[in-house]
Image (cartoon, rainbow, N blue to C red; front, side, top):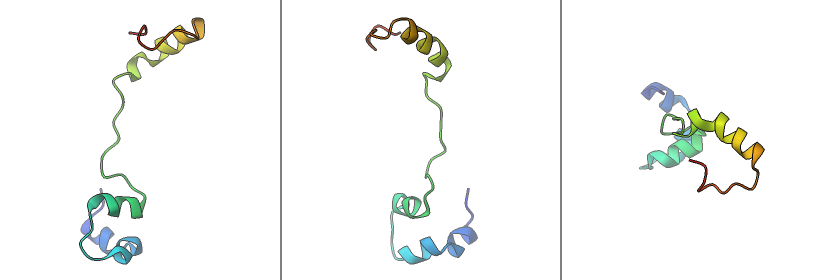
Length: 64
C-alpha cells in the first residue's frame, strides 16, 4: 500500500493533478487499486487440465 508521501513524491500522480478518479491514478501509476485474489477454480485447475488433456473436445459445461 502506498503512503500519502509516496503518492505526493510520484511524478506520474503529480502530472495528473486536479480531481482524478482512483482508477485513473492507478492506471497512470501502473498499479492495481485492488489486491489480487485467486479464482474459485484455482483448486481444481490440475484436475481440469487432466480432463482436457484426456478429452480435448469436452465442453466447458460438462467440466464441473
